[in-house]
Image (cartoon, rainbow, N blue to C red; front, side, top):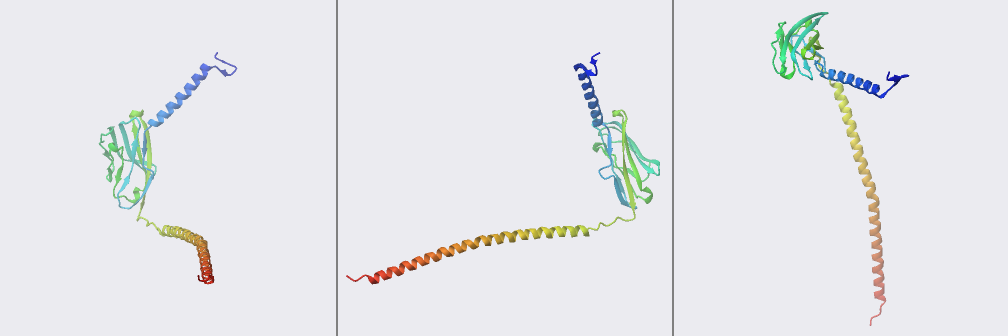
Amino acid sequence: SSAISGVLFLPDMISLEFGIYFFFFWIIKYCAQALEVSVGKVPFVEAMNGSTVLLPCTYSSCIGIKNLYFNWQYNDNGTMQKLCEAVIPAEGIEPNVLILHDRVEFVGSSKRSNISILLKNITFEDEGQYICFARNPKEKNRNHSAIFTLFVVEELKEVDDTLTVIIMSVIGGVVGLIILIMILKSLILFLLRRGPEKNKECLVSSSGNDNTENGLSGSKTDNKATPKA
């Protein structure tokens, strides 16, 4: 045996490490290639009774698609009602969609990996969950689904932005006050610095005048005291 008292020799350690790396590499590769469908970042919508609503769905696959099957279904209190279905032969080839509901229209495109549908003239009975499903034979028939929820209302609620306006007004007022305080502070500091400078200028000027006057008066006295030749 290559292992004695629970101690693994170098060949066994290398084999074990290689096996672990291979396992995680296979897992990461499989997950990266996996088919995924998405109904967007916001998986619900609120729409008015009688309007037309978009049920969004896109698919993605790192290794591409071949004969991708997809369908849309409506969850009617636990009973799944199929709305449409189709097969996309390959990337860029548009599918022939079988519509199974008279108010459903396919608006997707394989060129954009989009399999969205429109639901027209919605009623309150249309409210609920809609499931977008896809299966990719190229990935050993791996499948994935996503749920989009529809809420039907009599009329859309008006968004009251009064609070937002108040908050923005308060923030604007505070910012304006801060700017005003900074301006006043700068002005006061400027005036305080200018005060001593003016005082120094006045002192220098006053001292110069005094010296000048003293010099002139002395000169006049000397001139008067000097006798004529």
